[in-house]
Structures are given as structure tokens and as C-alpha cells.
Image (cartoon, rainbow over all chains, first blue to last red; front, top):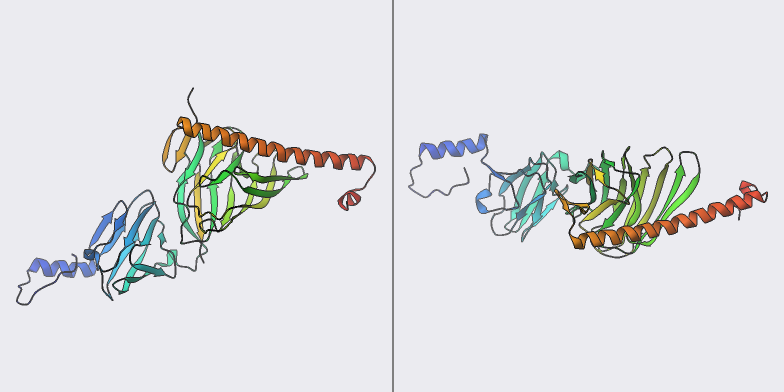
Length: 283
Length: 64
């Protein structure tokens, strides 16, 4: 039961008292499945997000007063991000809640709030899952949207599982940018020969990972990708073929664009299965 | 002939004509970039092999 305002002389019903008591022991819950903007009636309640895709809960000013609290939790597979609308929201942890994370939103004034996350998303942990994306069947490209935001400056992209239809490099494109990619990788073949792979003003990072019928190897760290600075990339992967090599290298995208999306693609053939994980490095 | 499949988050569908043209252009650009990079590597490997054939040791080649 949401907070009620009783007036002088009003007769409380047993049902009202029972409902208020119940809220202490079994908090009023409202479950959301799409983007949601908090309303005044959410005060003192538990707002639950349950969605397989990424959603937001927006916090606006002049709805709550100093001392008001509510609990926000995410039970869906999609990341739920607490977003400052017209109110401010600060936290020592992360505002991006993975599945089964939550915390208390506490207002210090009508327009200022603090989110106290549970331990699972506290700043003491190194990485927080921002988004996961299952790769479809025989797809030539996979575009992941909403991967980067202001909560993190640095990210790790990992692919777990999956195969390709033929031996291929995995290319990485940020946003819709098709120029200015520079990279250099040391490549040591499993037979012991050292060579190099590189990009010089390429249309993508052309050798960001590798895929074959034996699996996909993709492990890339991105620095400053959401900031209006050059994006720095660090690559580390194994060519999953007996005649292949282990590769380590780095590069950068020569512009100051802020990116939220990325696209991976095999240089030839298609990808099937596996999951792309996007993690944010906690500050 | 069916066009390649594009995946945008959870949506998987056939590419539009515009997307297919952009995809092919990007594939071509990537292939050209890699061919150029591979040619540089091959040229270096060839040069190193020729130096070794002339009798230079690995340390001598590395010091060049």
C-alpha cells in the first residue's frame, strides 16, 4: 500500500491498518517491464524491473521530499539503469543494475537523491556486466546498441561460445564510423614464427578477434569509448585453428566521438551462437 | 539470392539493399586493408630470408 495521507477525524478501517502493517513486513511491489519514470506514489514501495532487454528507471525532481526512500531492484536479464532525469542521482557504486541487483534510493531533498546499491553492484567489485547479447544463427554482422554509457569510462568485450562458418577474423566497428582505425598486433604462430598484423586508417579494427568452426576468440578492452576522446583498444585472442597464432596488440580510433554502440562481423562467412558480454570497469 | 542476415540486438533479419551495399563496401575495404598489411609482412619475411641466405646471423639481422 502506497503512503496515505490521513485527515483529522478520519476513521481508519481495519483494511487500511492491515495494509499499512503489511507494507512493513511485505513491501508493496510494482513490477515494470519497460522504461519507467518514478512517480510520487512510489515512495516507500519496491519498484521491480523485469525485462529481458535493457531498460531505465528515471528519477525526476519535485516528486519526493528529504528523507523519502524507495527500493529499486532488477529481476530481468536486461540491465536496468537508474537514470537521472531532472533530479540528480549519485552513488558510490553503479547505477546499472544487472539481474538480481538492487538498492535503496534515498532523497536528501526534492531534487537530490543517492542510490545505495547492494553489495553485488558496489564499487568494490572490478567489473559490472552492462549488457549481454546472444548471437543469432548464421548472422553476418551483430550490432549491439546501448553498450556504453556515462557510468563507465572503460569496458571489456568478451565473446563466450559460438562458431563461424569458416576461418575468419572478427572485425570491430564503433558506431557507424568507417575510417580512422589504427592497430598493431604481434602474432606468434603455434609453430613459433613471429609476424605482425596491423590496421592503418582502416574502415574497422580488422583483426580484433578470430572465429572458426572450432570457436570464437574475442577479448577486447576499450578505453574512453563513451568519452569525447580517442578510443583506445587492447586486443588479446587466439586463432582457433591448428595453423593459427596467438595475438596481442593495441590500437586506437582516431576521432573524439562518443560511442554507445558497436558491431562485430566475421571477415568472411557467418557467426552462429555464443554470447557477447559487455562489462564496465568500476572506477 | 537471399542477402546476408544482420542482427541488431535481438532482432535478426535479412539485410536491406542499403545495408547490404554498405556491408559489401566494408568487407571490400577490410579485405584490401588486410591484403596490404599481409603484403608488408610477406615482404619483410622475404627480406629476412634473403639476409639469412647471405649468411647474416639472427642477431646481425636483428641489429639492422
